[in-house]
Length: 73
Image (tube, rainbow, N blue to C red; front, side, top):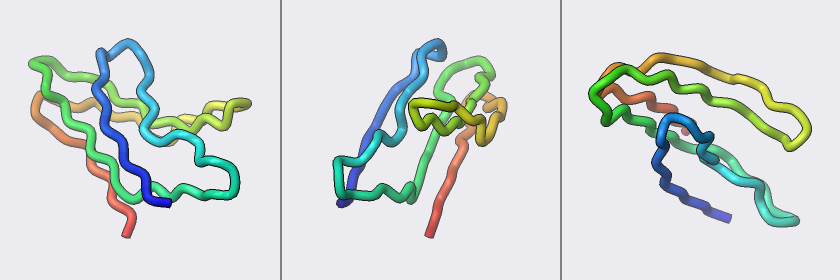
């Protein structure tokens, strides 16, 4: 089942990029674009959370106007 979401971070609260699918469905992450529209560098932490464990997948500092892009074709 296709699923799309958009979000904004205040740099203090985690943002869910992709929530759990409903029963009987699966989700596949196809693309994520994260852009720093601020005037200062920010740290982006991408993590996987299965409600029991949280695992850091990637951490990077984005300078102003830089974008972190993930595409899975």
